[in-house]
Length: 331
Ligand SMILES: Nc1nc2c(c(=O)[nH]1)N[C@H]1C(S)=C(S)[C@@H](COP(=O)(O)O)O[C@H]1N2
Ligand SMILES: [Mo]
Image (cartoon, rainbow, N blue to C red; front, side, top):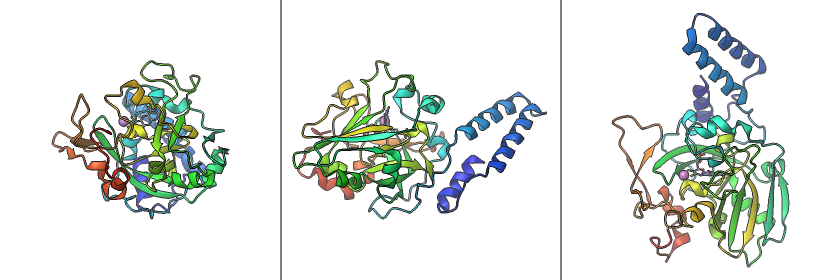
């Protein structure tokens, strides 16, 4: 039922899918009755899960737009991944390393109030509240492929605007060469911050020209709704031509610098995760091939693996950024 609503919302993004409080109560009541009635234990646990999903489901935020993107390459004809998969198969190590952990644990993340501090080599450093950020530019829906370095991919209708809109507002100095994204690291609300897998906070970075590229998205929502916590609420980056780990979640600070920042996965294993991390089927990870990928939702017994495309299929848009660079050295 939930999923069907979401598909409708995707096909008709303008159609409101807000459930009225009465309908909502009604549905919960129905599920409770089913759980306590003749349906038995299996149904009871299903209903409990469904009721939980309903209770944590965010409201559609009025500030989220559903205008289809006009940025070249920002839409794909690939089938959109089911919301259920996109929101239950996640990497967000602050909430555990299992793909199912973030959906289970991220309800403790506190997303209000939220501020993003922009600092470093800019003329106009500023502290933005989430509300200010939401209003800073017109939002669009962009359907991007996201390719994880582990060999799976998804297709997600994100909502947000080009990060370049924010960058233009803060006016980087001529000396600024890189943009660093520092994410939330609060041990009180993020149970695995402090685990030894990574150095916290989770930090990622882009070269300034990559950050300015119109495909680089500052995202507040997906599937017509605010981001669920496990997807990086309330604001994250999506850099579709790079491996997923470059897309930092739950960003609290954006810093402009002239030196290449140390990034979380690069610090953890520099030989496995380079600074650029452009999707490249010709450069294997030291422990596995990057030539193919598994599209989440297509993993039946007979599902064929997909060929991974250079720059995740966005080469026409971003290839120029790397003209003359040895992409095997600069992986
Ligand atoms: N803060 C933070 N951001 C993160 C991660 C993380 O562990 N912590 N994981 C990254 C990885 S490895 C991937 S593949 C994507 C996954 O995004 P998704 O769960 O929305 O698909 O988020 C990236 N951003
Ligand atoms: Mo990833």
